[in-house]
Amino acid sequence: MTFTADGPVESGCRYHVTEVDGHQPATLSDFAGDTRLTLVRGGVSHRLIGDGNTTGGGVRFHQKDPGPDDRDVRVWLITDPGDGTFLAEPVAAF
Image (cartoon, rainbow, N blue to C red; front, side, top):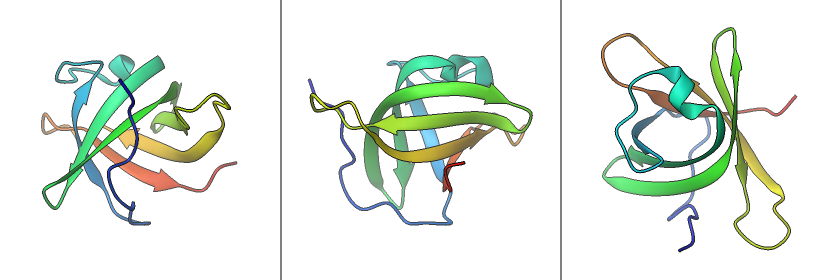
């Protein structure tokens, strides 16, 4: 099974995280380590694989290319706004 983005990603936009490793996320710690995410925006789903690292403001998720190179595709910041949802936004890598 491959997990790739199903369409282009819009910079500066937030996406709702609907699944992490096949279940609904409960805490930011669900995103730490090697994970698979499903994001939704405007009715379009995006499936990502990568590695999450907890930071002071959320989790920095490094999306990987599912091919043999395992190269970085983009970096996302995942946050918990406190309303039972989790949001992911593409950010500049640093």
